[in-house]
Image 1 (cartoon, rainbow, N blue to C red):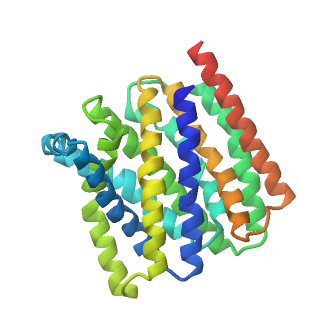
Image 2 (image 1 turned 30 degrees about the horizontal axis):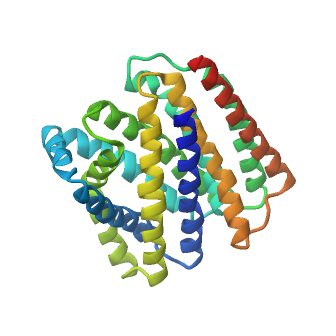
Image 3 (image 1 turned 90 degrees about the vertical axis):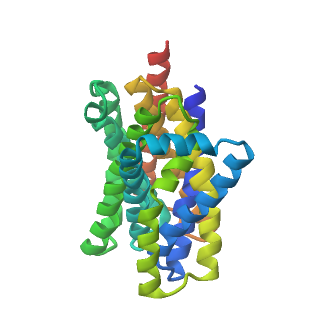
Length: 301
């Protein structure tokens, strides 16, 4: 139950990513800066936190042992996850991006045999069809009011990120084991993905100049609430489910609640309430989450 609760709380903080990215996009902020600034500020914040706990050296030692693995899986888990997500925010409201992001629920489960020797969590995959049906309904409604090109550009990048994030997370979780804490793992992955973000920020500078004040401020908030707090909580939740693919899949499913939090946040900022058909889709996602929690309890009991 603790891991499930941590997953829900992390989803609340993750939802700020979609809300703030939509705000940045509406003010014409370059998505390249939006993506890179988050991790640059994350690195600073995490370094200060770990330095105060005298926990930085252990991270460096582990990176020096496996530099290739750290750089590859950190770049995939953070770079190939967040850059496409920021790009997609140009073509849709935050709650639409958040709804598409729930593809990661199935992505994490489908990749289980390729990441470890565990079998596919078949029961959970059947359950996830309910959540996917909800996502399909939401996107179907969205495609009725936008162009096909905008729809594709808003969906495909998020799907790429949805596979990259659990892949990078699980690979690093297997590599690190219990040698580092969740916070240390986030710091290490942020550090090792920094070369990627430096290249992205350079391209952002040459394409649009310096980022605006609002973009910098929003990026700091995303770095703190989503990048540090949410990511650490989510990694902690997955650590608690280590070695059990069914439990791990359910923890990843809690991220579906991001869409609910994102809708509520968007409404507070002035967005319209989703259409009745979209609300039906959201309801199906909620049902899928509830059934997922029941499956978790059965797996524990």
